[in-house]
Image (cartoon, rainbow, N blue to C red; front, top):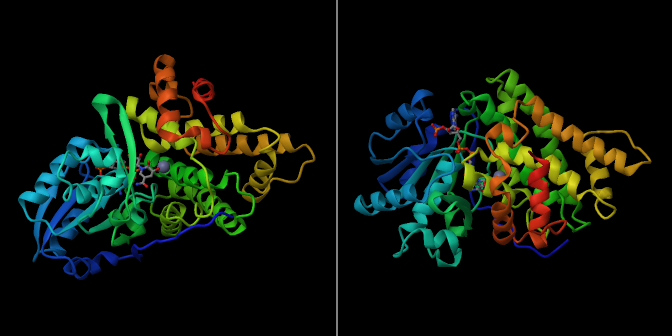
Length: 386
Ligand code: NZQ
Ligand code: ZN
């Protein structure tokens, strides 16, 4: 296990009705609040109304219309709003897109140049306004980490940035807020949680037993509860477990002590940057093909662990057969959750594979991945997903 520094500073308020603590949480920071949200789901499901009622004594300015795959233009608009209105705290209500956008707005407030600079170079982030989140989608883990991913569509770039000061101060996680999610968002969110676990589980370090056992438990949680949530959207137990899994999958718990670059995320970010697809859908499409591509003598033992400890598959002397069974199970699971499982189904053909493969390798340092990937490898993986 590699040396590491683990720091998960976000206070988590989990469970039914936790929103009632919002006035007290925000009061630590001031009265001028930027309320950040997406395309309006929070108005339809009543969360917006509840917040207005609770925050009667606050001065609220709204940053609305944050896109899935949030755009740099929206971030810039948010920074201006904060400056014009002396904002003291940002309240992000939504999924990863709203939270990520809020993080970069919070940091952009203190940065004098163009906000895109702090996306491409996180060392330029010096400070951030405090952020409080109300999570409405179990997926990214953004509610409990310091990362943010922002898109610049005119140049087809979707890049991640990170700074400790962007970690939310408090996140409110009420599983009932997930009841109104469209089925595809529940499924894609679960695929995202699983992918965060895969990215750290499939690493070269062999002795991070604690991390790997937590990882296997998180994967089993997703496999058990996503189908229940899809069948019965108001199943509290299912929503609660998926929501907590989202936060645990990307708060450093499973990734600390493991070295090397991620694999599917850099590839997916290229798909989103060029075709604006849902992050979790792109990951679900890529994952089985990536697994098949990297299955070889050096990796087969890890896939055997995955097969037996996650899918409970019986031991088979033929390790490759067992590994392939687990990969098939992964693919079937995503399919049964209703995720389109080919690139063609989401409107992607091979015309940009070369460009995207090159960018994925450059942005994602894929030469340092679990199995090192160059642009030809990524091209082949994209082709397998058609
Ligand atoms: O915009 P609204 O109207 O709110 O609708 C959203 C949006 O259309 C809807 N939604 C969210 N909660 C809902 C709901 N609809 C009904 N009921 C609810 N309770 O769902 C749609 C998708 O929302 P979005 O925030 O885009 O989804 P997600 O949480 O999956 O976030 C995806 C973004 O996060 C980035 C992704 O790349 C992508 O840009 N990621 C962020 C990470 C991080 N900060 O650590 C890591 C991830 O790997 C990921 O890259
Ligand atoms: Zn992700």
